[in-house]
Length: 192
Image (cartoon, rainbow, N blue to C red; front, top):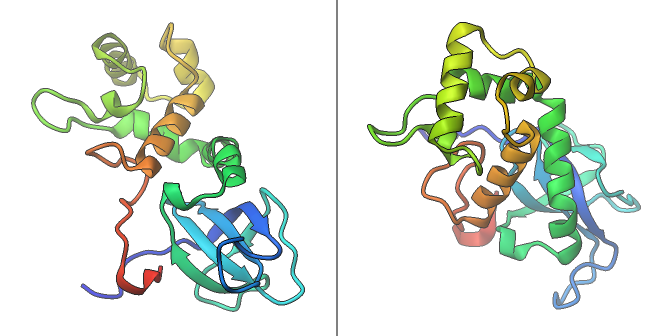
C-alpha cells in the first residue's frame, strides 16, 4: 500500500556543514542525520539562520519543523562525510541506550531465520555457544536490561556494542539480512 511506509520522526545530527559540501554547486548549509527509529541516514537543509550541533536531536516528522527546512534525500553510508562516519558509532550507541527496552526485547523475542541460522547470530560475536546460552537464559526468565544480559551470558561482548556494530554493518550494506535498519535503495530524485 502506497503512503503507509513509516518515516523517522526524530533524528540526531552527525555533521553540520555551514557552507554545504565542497563539491556541490550550491553554497547552502546542509546536515547529515541519523534517524532515531530505523537509523535512516538523511541529508537535510536547516531553516535559515539555524546552526545545528553534533548529536543534537531534531524533529523531522510531517508536522511543522522548528529547525529543519527540507529533507533533501536519504543517503547511503558511502555518502557520509568523514565527521559523520566518526560520529556514527557514538550516536548509534547513544540511541541504543536510550531505547534499551526495545533492544532488550530483540534478545527476548528474536527467532530463527531458517533451519540453520538464528537471527541473533547476525550480531557480530554471537556464535552457536552464545546463542544457546541466550536461548536457555531467556527461556528461564526474560531479560530485563542490558546489564541483565551481560550478567547472565558469560564472556559475551557488551550488548550495546554488538547492536552498534550490527547497525553499522547494515548501514554499510554488507549483509543479506536487516535486523535494525531499512535497506538503502536509491530512489529516483533521491527523495526520502
